[in-house]
Image: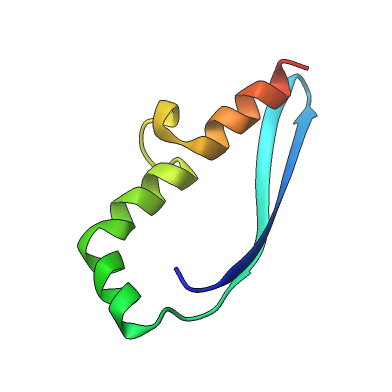
Length: 68
């Protein structure tokens, strides 16, 4: 990813933990875009929790928020 400003909102609602990201990203320079195409796409999917929640930082933050 390019330069970014990102703010996480971590909260509990109806007994469940939630995480939302509010952010803005600049375009990546060509050399970073090439690296992202090679491996970054999978890392981003893990980060956002598109696969196994135990690999997602956001899912883990939501679980902690839900614990009070």
